Amino acid sequence: MDSIGVEVLRLFAVILVGFNEITSTDALQEVCNAKDFHAQCGRGEIIVMKSANLGRMRLGKCISQGYGHIGCHHSVITKLDAKCTGKMECRMRKIVREDFEDTILDSQCPSELVVYLEADYECVK
Image 1 (cartoon, helix red, strand yellow):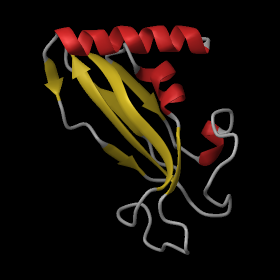
Image 2 (cartoon, rainbow, N blue to C red):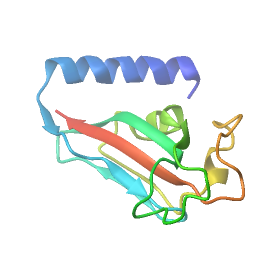
Image 3 (tube, rainbow, N blue to C red):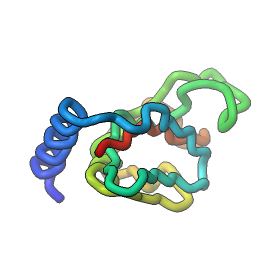
Image 4 (tube, rainbow, N blue to C red):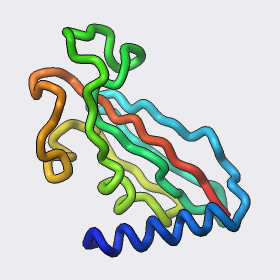
């Protein structure tokens, strides 16, 4: 889907959020390197991606050592929007940096360090 189509779908989804009941407000996922991302809504609901970042946002579940590079990240919302927004379910298996090479032109995080995906979405009727 071209970027204009993705933006139109995103705008439609935002309009849906504005006029419909939001049924799931806490769907923030932290997906470690080489793990699966899975977004799923209930029957009659669709996914609306709110944000998606790939990087080293903070120490925690996925990153235990900073190595001087905590807080570096790059938005990958365009890719997750195209894959997930408007669907009842979507999955990306074994997420790695290379999955987003077409989206990340100039990464702030050194390529030799492990990154993770932080994705936030809502389910709307």
